[in-house]
Image 1 (cartoon, rainbow, N blue to C red):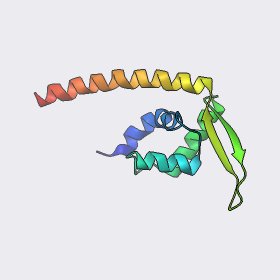
Image 2: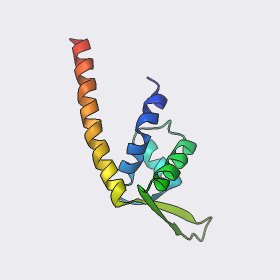
Image 3: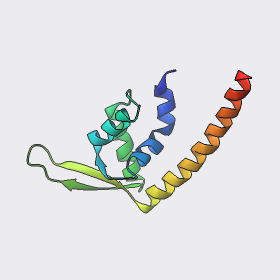
Image 4: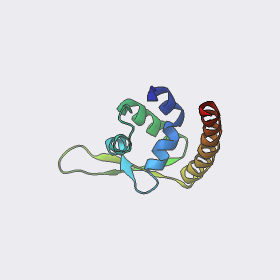
Length: 108
């Protein structure tokens, strides 16, 4: 199955979840997603989603200077980001239960 279309619908939630344990900068988040099994996630999609989540107030950011390259912009969840993540988790659980019902019915 092509994950691209599925990922578009859940990229906000995936990025918020990737940041729940620790802050991260753009490419670090891409790496986390790829290591988590989303090998086809595009950098442009992640960066665009980070900007949108930041503009919506779900993320805050700060810059960390680097001696070896450009400064890095780190993102962290705001209180609204934590709420959106919690709501998204509940929605995902409900949706996956519905899908399981359809798929298990189909298998029977």
